[in-house]
Length: 97
Image (cartoon, rainbow, N blue to C red; front, side):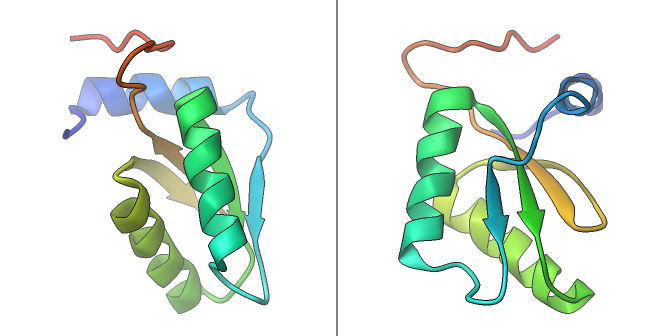
């Protein structure tokens, strides 16, 4: 699934009020952190993740999260990245067309 510019803009607006649900820090993307991200996406559809590392490490983690979860990266600003994955059975967020 690929998001259009208008859908990505809509989701960015929704992320303003979100608090980070997962923090990736010194130990990186451990199995527990990966499981938390997947579970949070399944429950919320749109999540904010705090990535605590240098720029190259954050970019690597961002790519890994997208790859392992199948989510779309909505945006990344500094140490915060947002991801969207539509729930297959009960979507909560209605995207503009």
